[in-house]
Length: 379
Ligand SMILES: CC(C)(COP(=O)(O)OP(=O)(O)OC[C@H]1O[C@@H](n2cnc3c(N)ncnc32)[C@H](O)[C@@H]1OP(=O)(O)O)[C@@H](O)C(=O)NCCC(=O)NCCS
Image 1 (cartoon, rainbow, N blue to C red):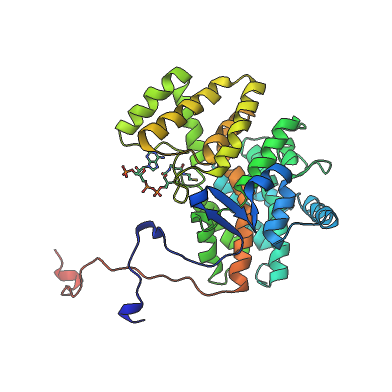
Image 2 (tube, rainbow, N blue to C red):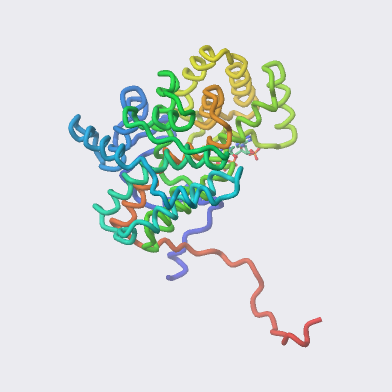
């Protein structure tokens, strides 16, 4: 490579195009998000998660017959192999669920004789299986880490409602199932974010989809990415009551701290997913008698906009919704993973279908030409 081919370094790769993708588009200037050509607002209003997963993986919306077949495939693959349960049971009680997901997905990969078949068809099959199993891994993985026994998936329920059923061992209220379905849709895909890009890098070495997903889960865990939903909820609990919200935000900003759940690398004038969820925060707050949480969010939003011109991202309302629905905080980022498995899988398929090793360069900033000193002469 000649000097003229080298593109100057951009911290965080901000503004750098790292691939071509037909899966989703963030049209930041219009606060729009598109999955395979369809506006997320239409998908959120009309679709089940299964329908959107089909769209993202197959590239087009399903017919009713295609959706029924896809739904049956997902349902038949919800249960985890015994070996995965054995691994989950061997993990430390109370351990980190994101790490347990990594162990679970790695085990699924070891059990799959087709793991190294990177053909489109084989990858699609694995993607469907991973989508079906990830929700079970999250719900039953959490139960096992808490010392509880796993709950069998309920074939009479859709993907989102079944997730809540496994977690709580009872059928969810319709509004909670609707919220879970909605957040699964909104979390399903988001372009070349950090975890998806990590999946691309891993897949580009011709490693298998399971390896790529294990790496993506690791990238999602950090608080600047998926971990923000848990951190945002911890902040709201620390605030405690609406009357303390403004002072809390002002104090954090004065300390130059980051308020989790605000800001976004792509959206600078609002995250459309957060706008969709806000109305649900109000509805669930009314239903559960937690208007205090709605009010805390509302005040934080107004102060952040006034002081920093920053808008909430999807993690901010999602955290409040999960909390009010009684979901323990350590599950929030794993739930994000259970939805994003669809996007990760679609991206791995895209990478394998048209692969080129991802291998950027770095600008060296260390010394050169140091005189070598043999070991016994070094002081
Ligand atoms: C998501 C995030 C990493 C994107 O950041 P980015 O594109 O790298 O933007 P920058 O870090 O350059 O931030 C630009 C400015 O906004 C500030 N800012 C950004 N997000 C902020 C936040 N959540 N709280 C307080 N200030 C924030 C930065 O401090 C910086 O201010 P400055 O110019 O006075 O130094 C960032 O907004 C953030 O850390 N948010 C909190 C974590 C989060 O919610 N992540 C989930 C994303 S979906």
